[in-house]
Image (cartoon, rainbow, N blue to C red; front, side, top):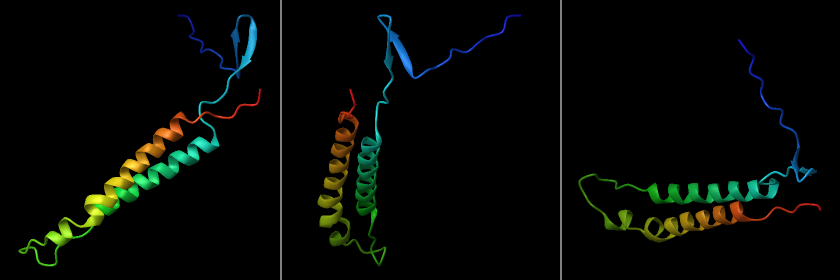
Length: 96
């Protein structure tokens, strides 16, 4: 029975007989923007879910259709998604 060997991963790749260093896809700045975008999305979801009527037999439109739930929370979610898009496609600064 033959032994299976795993390939060795190094920090360089060979391209046209030349060693090219591997660079990470995202840097610290990208991850920071991704975390900020995730927090904004979570805040929007939290604001959209809040509020309930005091009496369950009475339907209060001011609580269900409040400005926070209908306007502010969706804007925060969309803004967070735009920020995530920006964080993913932002180019990293490479020293060349």
